[in-house]
Length: 162
Image 1 (cartoon, rainbow, N blue to C red):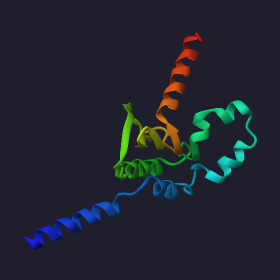
Image 2: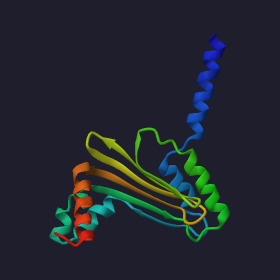
Image 3: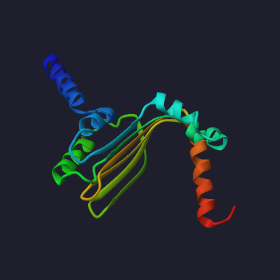
Image 4: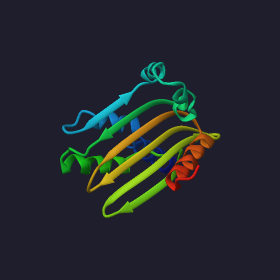
């Protein structure tokens, strides 16, 4: 019985070791040939706020964002895109809530968020498949109500009514 329990623990530890997090995925692909990567650190975000006008500074969404990382694999080889798609599938997404998942013509889009109470701590947009592959990672403290207000404001703008 002890051997079975020990074997189970070893298997679970190996699975955890294989699963990677999003930061590791970003670091793994950021230097690949053809990848465009952008990383805006928390320090640079604070510095950029010094040059914003008052309307932007008071925007709760902008105030809540601490850092942004973007990977664009559009110019990469198909081999790199396939590897990226496989690595995204291996991601350890425990603790994330799926907001949107769409599949069409071999392309997949997934938007997930890590929440603490009513605050978004991390928002991920991942695109994989035959065409474009991309990753957008936003970290911060963004209130869910602020995101909803922006969505509602965009609906008003789309309808053309205020």
